Amino acid sequence: MAQTDTDFTIGIEEEYLLVDRDSLALAEAPEGLMEACAAELQDQVAPEFLKCQIEIGTKVCRNVAEAREDLKRLRACVSKHAATHNLAPIAASCHPFSDWRDQAHTDKDRYNDLSHDLAGVVQRMLICGMHVHVGIANFDRRVDLMNQLTYFLPHLLALSTSSPFWQGRDTGLASYRLTVFDNLPRTGLPPRMDSFSEFERSVSILTDLGVIEDSSKIWWDLRPSSKFPTIESRICDVQPRLEHTLTLAALTQALTRMLWRLAQKNQRWRIYDAFLVAENRWRAQRYGTSRGLIDFGRGEIVPFGELLEELFDLIQEDALFFESTTEIETAREMVASQGSAGRQRTVYIDALESEDDRDGALRAVVRHLIEEYHADL
Image (cartoon, rainbow, N blue to C red):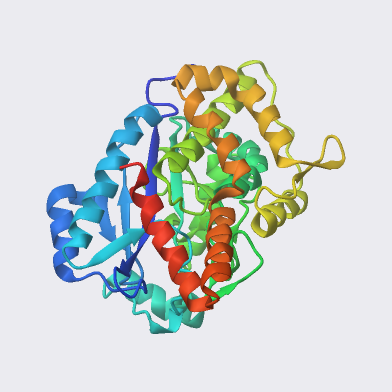
C-alpha cells in the first residue's frame, strides 16, 4: 500500500449563520448576496438548508498552510458581501437566541425534498457544522482507516464545541448542535465495516428501495464521501476562529496518516465497541474538554489536557510531515479557554454581571462571535 501523491490531501467545508448587524438576530441571505458571492467564488459557495445560512468549501489542499489562504479568502468574501446588506456572518453551531420557528428553508429541490421527507425533525435544523475531507485513494483503505479513526471523533468534538446556547438559554451542554442533528436518521457514529464493498451493498439496499437517492443522505459523524475520493469527518461544531478550524483540520489529517503508518507495520489502533465510543461522544458533547474522556486501555477518565499531550506524541511525525505542528499545538489554547463554548459562556456571564440583562448578555455573545469570525482575516 504505497502512499500516493493524492493521499491525505484535505478539504474543509464550513457553514455560517447570517445576522443583522443592528438587532444581531438571524437574517435571511438576500438573493443579491448569494449572487455576489457566487460570482466571486463560483462553486466554492452555496446556500444551505435555511435561508439564514451559507456554506463554503475550500479547494483540495496539500496541508493547512494551503487551506489557510483559501479559507481566509472564502471567509473574507462572505463577510464583504454580507456587509453591503448590513449583515455579518458568524461561525457558531447555534445562534444564541434566535428561534428556529422563525426561519424558512431555501427553495431548492434538494431542500424541498428534505423538508418533505424529514418533516418536523428537519425544521429544527438551525445548526452549522464543519467537515474535513482527507484524501484516501484506495477504497478499502478508506473504510479501514474510518473504522480506526472513529475512536478519535469524541476528541475532535470536545475541542470543537461552539453551541452552548439554544433559543436564548444556556443548555448546559458544550455542543447542543448534536442533540438536534442526532434526531435525523442515519446519523451518529459509523458502523464498523470490513470493506468498501460492504458499505456499497448497504447503501444499495436503501437506494434500490428508493429510501435515499445516494450515500449523500447518510449523515454519519465520519463517512466515505459521496462525491470525492476521501473520508469525511463531520463530527465537529463549526469554529468562530479560522485558526481553530485549521487546528481541527490538521489534527484530522495527521491522525489519519498516523493510522496509515501503523498499517505499514502490520499494526492497527484497537477498535472498541461503538457503545463505548458513544459514551466518550456524549462526554464531549456535554462537557467539551472540561471533564476529560475515558481511556479504555487504562480503564479511567483522563483529563483532556493529558489526552491531548499523548495525542501529540502519537502524531508528531505526521505533524512534521505536513508542517502543521504549530497549528496542531494551538489545541492547547483551545483547551485552556474550554473552546468556543467556554469563551461564549465567559462573555455571557461578564455581560450579565455588568448589564444585569439576559437579552443584552446574549447580544454580547453574538457581537463576540462576529469579532472572532473576523479576527484571523
